[in-house]
Structure formats: C-alpha cells, structure tokens
Length: 109
Image (tube, rainbow, N blue to C red):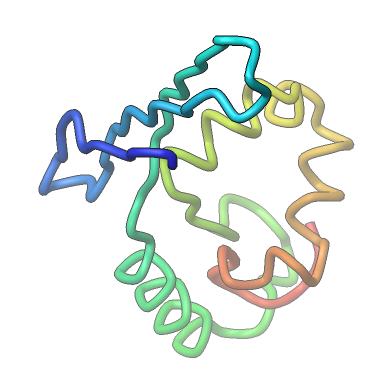
C-alpha cells in the first residue's frame, strides 16, 4: 500500500509538496519514494475564463496582449520539457485546444 504524506502546503499559491512511500510489491525488498508537487488551479481557471469572456476580439495589431495564465506547477513542467524555451513549441502548446483553460483571450498565437 502506498502512503502519501503532505510535506508542506503554500496557501497563497495552493501548491502542496508530497512524499509517497511505495511499498515493495515485487518481493525483492525494494522500496521507492516519490516527491510530487500538486497545485489547486481552480481559481486560475476561473480567472482565465472571466478574462477570456471579457476580452475583446484579437487586437488587430497583435501587440502586447496577455493570452494565457498558467499555474506554477505547469510552468515548471513546461520548462523542464523545453517548451518554454522554444517559441514554436510554446505557440503550438498555447494554440492546442487541450490547453484552452489556460487561455485568456481568443485567437491564435
């Protein structure tokens, strides 16, 4: 049986750091542990939806418009995957319909 324990919780960012001890199921006496980070993104998604609904159609000039807001946990995941450092990959990620909840305005990037 795996036992997940909260290490700490940041009330401002809603990020929790967890420790999970994985018991040996192979019979080899091997045990593993996992450190994980989770974030409650309910408020971020709600704010994004409100901003999306209140925004005008795409600025005809396309300059300096906030197009998305992403949670810190996701930011670090995208950074680790190299997506944040690759403008083409970031545009693809932002335009992916699966990521629409992070968008704050219509259009394509």
